[in-house]
Amino acid sequence: MNQEAQTVDSAGRVHVLNRENTTGYEQWYHYWRSTDTFWTRLAFPPPSELNPPSINNITGTPTVIGKRGKLVAPPEYPDILLAILPDNDANSTGLSILASTAQAHFRDWSVVWEATEGCAFEPLFDRYRLVEDGLLSLYLVNGTNVEIADLDLSGLAH
Image (cartoon, rainbow, N blue to C red; front, side, top):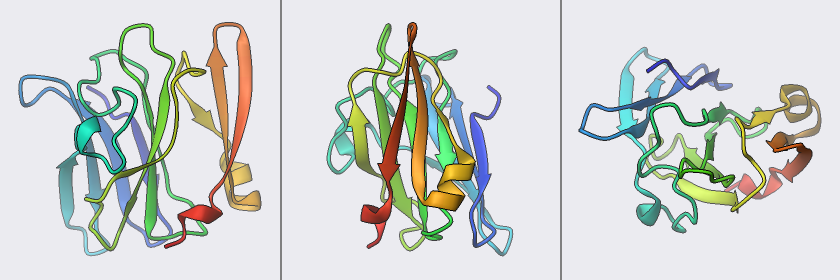
């Protein structure tokens, strides 16, 4: 499949989110390039292995043509990467945000925010508000309802 999302963090690391069927079933993968141009490919852990476990089907079996996820590299937190992943169960409108750290080589994905409903289509975020206000402002469409969810990222600092 085509890539889902791409971003470059403030340290210059390139990140790509992709879903693939290289193991017999669909799975999300995070590709990232270190600052010395070394590429790493890591599968996201299944929902039950996240800490805390996810309430949504975000990393278990994404569908081939399901809603696309996003990657966010918050400029105020250069060693944190966020993955905004929609629930890929049929007719689901759930959404989860996972965080991982450069210190753990992006192997320590954890759930930082979730909703079981409210996102029927691909989630979008406002890059300007992220940079200017430090807020992750999500644009969520669910049928004819449009909602904006502003998430304060200050709790991400470790």
